[in-house]
Structures are given as C-alpha cells and as structure tokens.
Image (cartoon, rainbow over all chains, first blue to last red; front, side, top):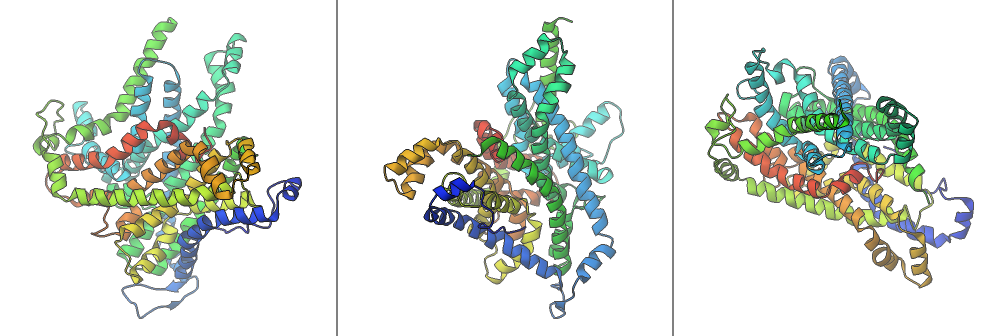
Length: 310
Length: 271
C-alpha cells in the first residue's frame, strides 16, 4: 500500500548508529533490495495500475470507446446498487466467520489443553480442516454435507423428522460462513492453544491455593492472558477471510447476499469485461482492507517489539 | 461428581466434538473408495466393498497433469520466496538496515494487499506478453504473495541467534556471505522449514489466481476441482477421490510439522 523510505527514521539507537559503520548499512540495504524490488514489481506497481484503470472508461466489449472518466466508475459502482450489498456481504461473512471460529477455537483449545489419552491424535484430527484445500473443502461440503438429496445434514434432518433444507440456495450466507468457520476454527485453536500453553503455571497454582475456583481463574487470569492471542488470531483471520473467493465461487456463485468484493470484482472483470468498474471495486477492497490491516499492524508490532528486539 | 468422573466426561465430550469436526474429512476419504451408486445415494453407508474406481476416474480426467503443475508452481514459489527472504530477513535482524520498522511495515502491507487489487493489471500485462497459462509465471506470483510472511518469519528466527556467535565470526574475519550462510543459516533451519511449509501450503491450495491466470497447459489442481461444480450425473465418488488426492500432500505436511505450522501461521509471533 505505501512504500516507506528506508532512510528517514533510524530504528536503532543513536549510539548504535555511531558504532556501526556506514558501509554496513549499505551491505544491509543490498541484502534487502532484491526482496523489496520483487514486491514493488509484483504488487506496488500493479496496484498503481489498478488505480489508473479505475479512472478510465474501459469495457473490453467496446474497445474503441475508451478514455479518462475521472471518478465515473466509482459513481457507477455506488449507484448501480452493487457496492453497498457487496461491502455488507464482505463484512458480514468476515465478521461472522471470525467470531464463530474464535469461539469454537477457544472451546477446542480449552478441551485440548487438558491432559488425556490420545490428546496428540485429537489435536492432529482437529487441525485437518484447516489443511484441506479450500476448493476441495467447499466442494465436499456442497455435495456431501449440504446437498438436499445426498447431503449428510439433510439425512440427519430427515432421520429426526426435521424439515429438509436447501442450504446453499435457502441460506447462502450461513452456508458460506459454516464452511469458513469449519476451516478457520483449527487456525484459531492452534493460536489459542499456544497461548494457553504459554501460561505461567505458577500463577495458576497460586490462584488455586488462594481458593479461586476454576471459573474465576479462567475469567481473571486465563482470559486476560489470552487477549493478545485472540487479537493475533482475529486480525490475521480477518485479513485472510476479507479476500476469500473459493467458497463463494463454489458454493453460491455470489447469490443471496454472498457477493463479496472479491467476487464482485471477478464478475465485473472476467464476466462483464468492464475493466474500469472492476478496478474501482479493487480499490474499494484495498481501502476496506487498510482499515482492518492498520489495526492488525499495530497489534502485531506491539507483540513483536515486546518479544524480540535486540 | 468426583474429579475422576468429571475428567472422563470432559474427555468423552472432547472426543465427540473432535470427531464431529473431523467428520467431513473422514467422509470425503470414505466416499472416494465407494462405488458411485453408493456414494451418491440418499442413504449414507459405512459398510461397502471398497473400490478404486473413483481414483481411476479422477486420473482418467487428467488429474496427474494438474498435480504436476501444482507441484511445479508450489516448489518453485517456495524456492524463490526462501532465497529472497533469507538475505532480507538478515538485513532486518542481524546486519540491520536503518529503518527496520519501515521495511517490516512495507512487507506486511503487501501481504495484506488484496489479490483483487493487483489481479487486473497482472492479467492484462501477462496477456499482452503472451505469458498467461504459464506455470513458472504463476510460481513467481505465488513467491511474491508469500514472500512477506517468509521474511517476517525468518526474521523472528534470526533474532534468536546469539549475537556472540555472529561477533565471533566477524572477529575471525568472516565475510558477509560466510556470516549468513555458514554461521547464521544453519542455526535457523527450523525457520527455513517453517517458511517453506507455509509458502508451499498457500501455493498448493491457491484457487483465485490459478483459475484466472491459467487455462489448460498450466492449470493447477484447485481450479480442476472447481470444474466439478458444473458436473452432471453422479460424481461424488470421483470428486471425493480427487479431493482426497489433492488435499493429502498438505494434510500430511501439516500433520508432521505442527509446531512449524503454528509459528508460520502467526508469522513468527507465536513460538
């Protein structure tokens, strides 16, 4: 998003700077440069081009009719009625999936933090949904879980004499959120489990000795300790789910309030062939992501700088 | 209730919940070995005569070609990302540039940049240059997508190298190359494994760019699976078999490297 000048603010202390010779900084810059250049070429420059596209009238169906239009594409995006629902869909899907997977992740982390027979196996099975290729996960859920005829969920409903649901058409949003929650619960669980296992056992024992019950120990000691881990999980999860595409393309094709910004852009660009308008959606996606990512960055830096500065 | 009954109850509840959660994966695996008529039946069956027909059908659809493409894209992406990440991370941890925080912010902001924001220009440029449907181009793009995470992770590992070791090497007159590759790198091999694992997983599983930037020669496995969406007739067994094969490499890698996985997913923040 922004390219920061690497020479303006010295990160090291003043004494450090004096001690280290100029040539060493040059050598360090040489080490860093290839990676930075690579990313500038692959992401920074294309993003600038996207901004450029978004200011141009350009539909591949009418290649002759092309020219600068200022903010017309944004106006079209706003007035066509597609943008509002799309932002809502993106925010809803992201928020619901993240919240649910944190809650389930916390539950599983607490259950797997106790010693019991076969704990390693249980943990291994639990992380698997996150490892399954997302396209495969969406397809398996669509056909073997949600399907009205052969899906397990409806087999369960029928066995219990409950109404049969056409999940992906009757409840598209819930369908997408279910699959995402299933995939991201292990992600949250792993992060929270690491948090639980990083707890100071001495403090927990002291609390027990002082007569604090399990619940009070949990709310007064464990939860505050987990806060940082919850933050990391929420922010990393949110940034990934914000741009999620596979489950939507496979489960609902953007119908029924699931047309996220990523899917809308895909539809406008690669089906509608409207480069200008699609680019405008791309820019809006970035703005939305920046809002989330700014918060994410601040937290990550706090965690990192507390942990490992030299 | 005694502590013991409580414990038994909690353990039982844990197992029930874990098995419910794992069930879709188990069902995918099982369906892959069923004859099509049983897999696509309204009455789920646990007992059946296993067959490899589903797997044969998947390979009849040309799956090996897509798998080879996926492997190519993922391995090259991993290699490129690691080769670029090692020196960059070194310059952010041991032999430091002036503005470490600025550079870290730059890397991570590119990771957070939605692919949607860059896919149009990439598509247009590649189309103009005739580089669409090229597996190595896809690998380069995947390397770029994963490079920031690799840099952050490698940095967190380099920070743990005792500075005395580096200083001793410098006193002995080791050059920069020797300092990085002979002294520091062997100490952070778990970090290399972590970064490589995460890059491989994300590249292997990637669907959005693969479906837009490849069409036939360089088509990878995820969009191949995606093509089942428009399938007609009964196809749950072949779909399950294909999904099992597609998911297996990452599942096994993740199972083996659970520790690296946690650290990789949190970009090195959680040890």
